[in-house]
Amino acid sequence: MVLTLAPAGSGKTRVLTRRVVEAVRGGITPGRILCVVFNKAASEVMSERIHGDAGLPGVHIRTLHSLGYEICRQAPGSPYAGYGVVTEQTLPGGLTDLVRKVLKADFEQHTAALPYPFPEHLVVAYQEAASRYRRTLTPIGGDDPGVEVEGFDGDQARRIREEVDRRMKEKSLMTFDEQLFRAVEILLEHPAARSAYQHRFDSVLVDEVQDLTPVQFLMLRLLSLPLNNLFAVGDDDQMINSFTGADPENIRSFQRWYPGAAIHTLGANYRCRPDIVTRSASVISHNINRFDKPIRPVQAEAESDRETIRVIACPSLEAETDAVVRTIRRWRNRGYEYGDMAVLVRVQSIAAPLQSALKEADLPFDPMDAGALFQS
Image (tube, rainbow, N blue to C red; front, side, top):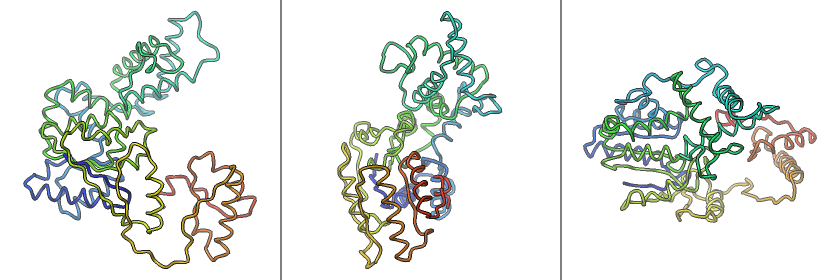
């Protein structure tokens, strides 16, 4: 078992590729190697490196969702073999409409009258709790008030969950994020399925381990048994998916799950200029509950008239937008084109006042959404 801590720009994709190549050289058949990546885009990059550059087309490169989909439909003994995924076609109105109908029926059966106006916020609260449960295994309803759904008592939340599950089962449907939950359920409860998948791979590699939810990490641990030949790459300082249920304890507790596991650190940053690396490392060093790791620049400091990093402290959002306008004008006076500049905002709520300030200053801009930005 190996955990490789890989800060941004440290070459983790190359390390994963080399690990696969060395595993094959060590005698492992390519078809018995599983490389787990975070999303489809990462899968395409890894496929290019391993299937193309390294010439190992037999290696399995999968997202956990695609693997969960396969386990639900193909694992021996799976009760979900014929299930489909919720779409507008398979479930008109979607899951939201189904939960609303179940909630209305529950109110009519267990209260004197249906609330008016109907509490739509309870539909949202239930769906959020159900999704959280499927990602983090936090129960819905029960005796523990810490796991109840906001706005429900434990009994009502349990009734809603059971009735929604019954209707979904009746329709042979599951949600997208439910696939992983059900796949773990299959591996835990069906010995034939567990044996089939645990003996399918001799080596399991995983990228971005810090962004795994508890359910995903449990699935990975199950798949890597009984050999525990697991090679994980990640960085606790780069965990940005806590809002989806990602748990930093997955990476922090790696040695607790795998006593004796080796931990290696990639400390060199090949991607960024030295000033960016050193200042970023300085900020990151203040994170709490982290692995202490060196982050050093590889690029030489180049002579440049480009302005280095500046931190401008502003007392208000209005002062912040004014500072952005002044900075854009200063850079324009230095010869930069407007198209050479980009303004990134942390949350969407900041974008509107910023765009208003740019309009008032008569500065041209193109409001890109995140998808367009990363595709451009």
